[in-house]
Length: 305
Image (cartoon, rainbow, N blue to C red; front, side, top):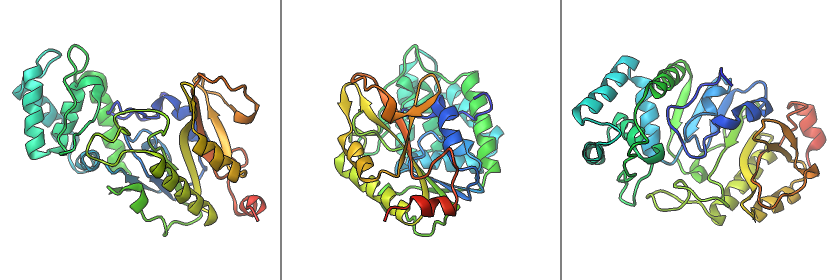
């Protein structure tokens, strides 16, 4: 895990804590890695691939990544420290934070968004229906520190050295028709049975409900029918709730492989575990067997009639 690049964004739902589990389950060789819900970018920038296609419908987040890609590191850091000085940002200066927030909402400078996130409550990214950043101040909790600066520099270097294309589509509009058998699609959508700022439907962007869940599962089925590898991060159970849509989908597609993700960083089959109704059961669902790898012969053997 020490070798993994960590996103400078403390993104809710980020996969940094389980990356050591899911990364080994991906194909060993990938031409184009498509991340339909890139979020903090923890997964995409740690997977060896010839090309990265990073997508998120939160366009301001993608604008930030684009800015990091094209702007020299020195200039990025100068901007950040310049804003901290200009607005006297600190653990207690809420007025300075609000002044920068107003400036960002009027100008939408992508680097200002990062500075805001550094000082916002729980480092969250949240917009209202008018696409104004509205996350409150993180008093006594949030600031730009040396760890965040180090993660940012490493992240920028990786972005600059990677063959990356950026997209701001809703996942339903992302064109996957040109993908081939050596390409790979990773989906880490908002989880249907959990609630967060990314799926409560209150930030001026598309929320997440049963309709979106069904559309995504259909899209993954389409990839499977065309022999395109995919992996889906999700939870089958959380705080006494079960994702019945996901269970039904798995029952209809018995060739899909369910890899259970554990906090102790070990993998096991979800079929053999006792179902603790209160526990969170996080999984990575693949349309190939990670233990055997993926090849054309194996695809033909497991392809349903």
